[in-house]
Length: 89
Image (tube, rainbow, N blue to C red; front, side):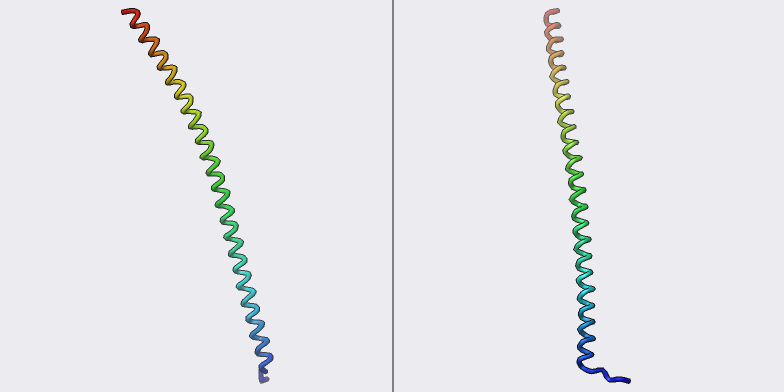
């Protein structure tokens, strides 16, 4: 059995440390990329939600305006019916 010299042992430990460092750096990069993708996906979903909210708000405003117009027309009709009834009495 051959004896391992100090320089060979140090080179071996250095290579192992380099491999551990590269694996750690690769994992950190992978996790950061995954996190970035998740954030981008959440931002896309948030934009879609805001778009749906804006569409709903616009539709609600249109419905409110139509309802206000209908109520004004009903008030006008009621006033004319009251006027007609007063003239009949």
